[in-house]
Image (cartoon, rainbow, N blue to C red; front, top):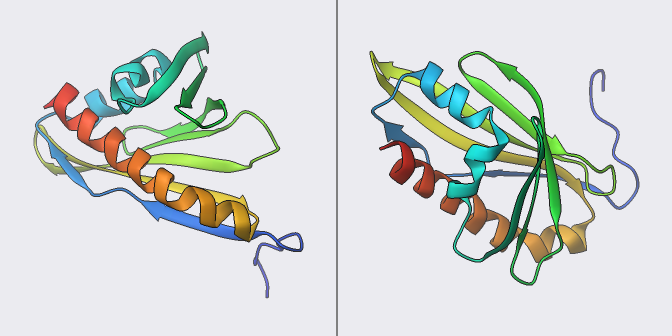
Length: 145
């Protein structure tokens, strides 16, 4: 089909979504917060064994028992989308924050994960990734209230 992404043999596209949360902050405030790597430290789940900001666009983190993941700010669409991507081509994926205005000074946020993974890898990490996305939005709700 035209425009269809051709997957390498044995690779599936995986899409996961966090619950949507409501925040008493403007879309601009949330966008600016999520565009800064150092702000992800307080959002990390309690089982984070490493979090380090490498530069103004990149951070690395590790969850207990999991390999390190390096994320880089790839793009943004002020004030409704922040896209972070894997800094390595070994595991291509994107973590997106979808921000929407629900009322003046009120916003909704939902995180999505999109990656191209082999079926075995997808099966192994689907549960931990769902938990990770849920923890990020829950912590964002606490940090930004």
